[in-house]
Length: 535
Image (cartoon, rainbow, N blue to C red; front, top):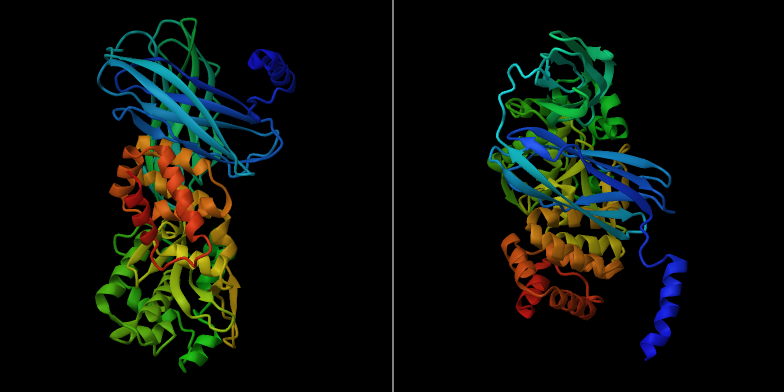
């Protein structure tokens, strides 16, 4: 009876407050064609309008697409989609060769700047039929190619779109949209004709200037046209690979490309004066002489990451590691046979700068000593990578933050009174470094969650999202570190085999028990507790 009394009141409040579920955005997801020929290219378009009161900063794609569909191109959500702005996102797919009806289950998680998750889903059924022989059917036939499918960063490439009308009536062209690859810009293009006459052809040219970073993907063109009274849209893609070899580029171009990070190429000093005093060592500041050591290390390299890995492997192969530091200048370290891990990090930075790649030494600073936990960073494709010889680590900063030993480093600079700094010496007197802790903290949680999703199955991703979405603040950070410390197979076994409520409860229990305890050197000790306590 109580329910009958209060139910109308609840219904009234819900209807007139409109607060049961009203997402702060309007979204439209569409499929260009549900009936496909085997191997045909098609696309899904999402238009996302931010109608709320805060910006959106991220979209996570949790979609389940059958394995025999090829994802030709995926979009990137804007870093910041402000209130009132909209984004048009396009996914390009290639249908499988096997006929049948297939479900495309689209799942998306949007994050606003308050770190609130918003979930959307949509499902399409597409039918794939056997490919027809189109010869002589009298329809528009299109081909698309590039003047070169492999170019250097900053070079121009010409695209050729051939539109041929094999029919007996004109075909109206309604639109030609060019989707350039990441970092590329359209510098010229020819306008499409309004129609193509029967048995006639048009070739449209456009020119792209490629970006100054490595890229491997596709250039895609969308052609809208009216044929026999029906509106159609076709998608054509051709592969492209952009090579970026900064060791072959002049300084003026490097300055334009890297902007403020150019400093981490031209600074001849790797460590500051404190290092010089602590180890009673000489600092020369001669990066140019290291070019003798980098000869041959760029062979086969087509990006900063390739060159960096070659340098990393060369140092490991040519030097034996110990614990005693005697030199702090790269050229003096290079002449030794046995080096410390810190010397290896310094040598790596010097050799990367000799290759015109931004690189720096990152350490912990306790207020007096800035030589603690030295690792090297280098810059590529808009993000920093980390090299750690002691732990034999080479990877992106996101991957580094997802290791079992990063939580201890985080604890020291976020809670323990330390600072995370990059050595930035200019006078080589005393302490000269800049704080980079804020850089690490800025997107740390999203970065770790992104890495975790590369390690989990489709089902595991869904459970992972649900677990993390129940947590905030330090508890959420602790949970991310805990799950990221797990071996991949053990993580998936837990997510797929255990009850989600039990996993959440046990993580919260471990956090409450250890939250006031300094983080351990290896966070896997907490993973073992979770694994053994969750059945």
